Length: 295
Image (cartoon, rainbow, N blue to C red; front, side):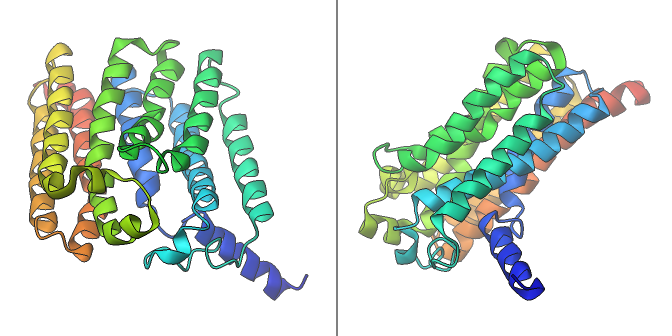
């Protein structure tokens, strides 16, 4: 194989792993960082941060490869996905499965130095990542299942930092389920017409004409759960300011999705990186800046 051919294969693998589209990685990373900072009272060990950041990238990459493998016969019929490597048949199924296995193996090696409790949670995380794409065949709200898969870094972070998940970890995972329902319904609204034709189930189809209302309610419930978390932990103004900024971001998303245009819905989905960032900024300000400022 020549250098040019190797470069072409690597470019295809990069596209298959969506390394050129970091939004998916951020949607996994933000909840994990929320949990790490809260579980350690704002002082996570640098090694834990690096392990979870890199592990998030590896597992997100493995997840999208498996997703594209599962949807390889559907994606050619969807305008937005028809040029993906598996859909276009520029990468073989054997290559894709091998790549996914290597990524999962690397992610698992990363967590070996951590508490054994995290190992078992990691196995569940792998199962969720592998099984999620197939829920679109029969489950009316696959986005809720995605919320568990995308948020499983939360219990893993608590277990890694403290040796146990605790009630707080599971409550935060519940909040993430509602966030995923919100942002992935926005995403599903982009492909609704194509999904109806090929028989894929999504929250956008299930919610029907109440899709916009459902998205906004999910944002509200998610922020409500995190507000309760803040009250229970006796957090102050910086934390709730972060939630307020996130609420404003959600309000902006309403202006993007209310017309149900493809471009608007996709823009709202991608904009969720700022929603997650706002919450993280509030947590960091609460735990790291507030004591320093004497608030």
